[in-house]
Amino acid sequence: MTKTLGLIGAGNIGSALARLAVAAGLDVVLSNSRGPETLADLVAELGPRARAATPAEAAQAGDLVVATVPLNTYTQLPAVALAGKTVIDTMNYYPERDDRIAELDAGEQTSSALVQRHLADSRVVKGFNSIDFVRLFTAARPAGAADRSALPVAGDDTAAKAQVAELLDALGYDAVDIGTLADSWRSEPGTPVYVQPYLPAQPDGLTQEEMGRWFFEVPGVPVPADKVRELTDSAVRRSAGDARATLSRD
Ligand SMILES: NC(=O)c1ccc[n+]([C@@H]2O[C@H](COP(=O)([O-])OP(=O)(O)OC[C@H]3O[C@@H](n4cnc5c(N)ncnc54)[C@H](OP(=O)(O)O)[C@@H]3O)[C@@H](O)[C@H]2O)c1
Image (cartoon, rainbow, N blue to C red; front, top):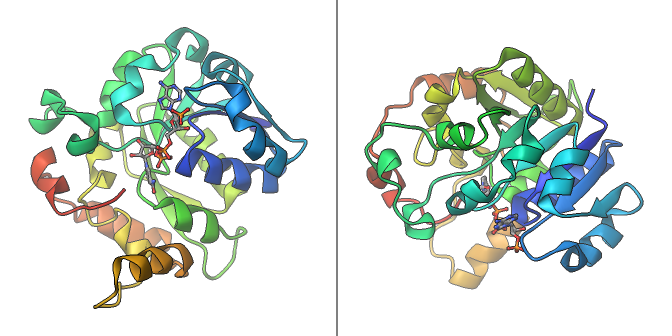
């Protein structure tokens, strides 16, 4: 059972996961690129279960570690400190943000397979990548709740996936195993399960400001496990550029 969650990246997703983890009674060790002192406010808000550290220290402290940084920094993840660990990869490829990665544009690899290649001695599991950071926090529900959602997980190591499913359960989600890291394109940007199902339809005619408010305030739509399975099964592989062209946010 995970007692301490290490977080490399403490932005939108990292801080939402830290809040859920603390609420679930876990200790969290947060890190970012600018140094522990820049996380003082977040740590104070999270309370005594939280502390800030360097990425390598967060990696070492975690029974389970989340890598939640922009994909174009994945080669900076501390591979030695992460050796032997299960690492949850929340990262998505956005060419306009991450610069072009030829292997991904060619559809030869999934982004998580690249992360696994860098973290050769870790067990990488893709997870938490297909829900936006607001719903990630607000749509979490206790086990058995009628409106609990499920999230896809993918990985090459069965035991690591079970460990991640246990974390999802503690944090408020059911897990749907969608296969290996090679299969993880089924939850990448542009696929049917990606972000949209967890949101209601956006009203027409909103100003930019109203759209921002809507995004932050609208309640999520529960997406149960059978729906996640149906959506991921129905995914069709497209080139990264095509798949992302219509997406404006992750
Ligand atoms: N936003 C979403 O709704 C969403 C949903 C699903 C998946 N994702 C994916 O999850 C990942 C994180 O997204 P986000 O929205 O949380 O990003 P974000 O808000 O921009 O936060 C990124 C975090 O990564 C840290 N970071 C950057 N480079 C680093 C490095 N070399 N070493 C350690 N930490 C580093 C940043 O720290 P500094 O600020 O100190 O640089 C920051 O804490 C992305 O790959 C994204 O595609 C996002």
